[in-house]
Amino acid sequence: MINVSLLLRITLLILLVFNISHPAYAEAKVGDRFGDWIFECTALAEDKTACALTQTIVTQKDNRRIVKFNLAHNEKMGGAMLTALLPLAIHLPSGASGVIDREKAFQFSLQTCLPHGCIATYPVDSNFLKSMQNGKQISISFTPYGKKQPAHIRGSLNGLAAGLKAANIK
Image (cartoon, rainbow, N blue to C red; front, side, top):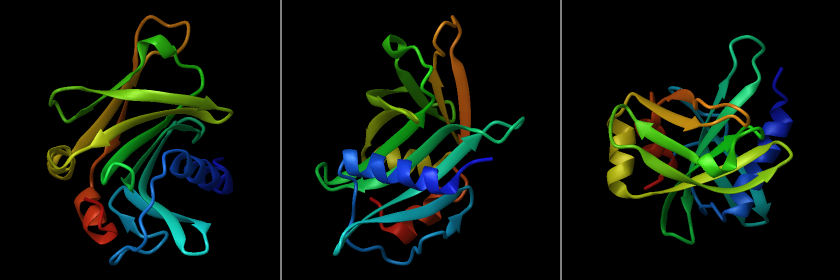
């Protein structure tokens, strides 16, 4: 079973490491569900909160996390950042790539690996956000360590457009 407290702490760490925060959100409240995405926030300081739309992909067999997607505003960039928390046992030189539906693949940048997974990021512009809002699924591919074939993990984009609007992520 997934430890919800642990996932929230991992999300906080991702948000802290990459300075993904936003001072206020229009209509979204912590725990709000937008299709397959959930709005999560963590207090960073007295007047500063880090929030993201998240989706956790789990194994069917034992409900363990495989990938956790976070989509949040990034103050440093002035835009949004897509972050993926990947399993530890990945072949780092192979990297990680993503695709929205069957569009052109994009390359995640592997940032670091922590005890609970490896963090990969992709800076998101307005065109990419539109693709996500109009898409049906997001896929991420990475090669497990010691394997020759990459793993392809699919997530849903159902509800993302409504979540982006409610969370004021642009």
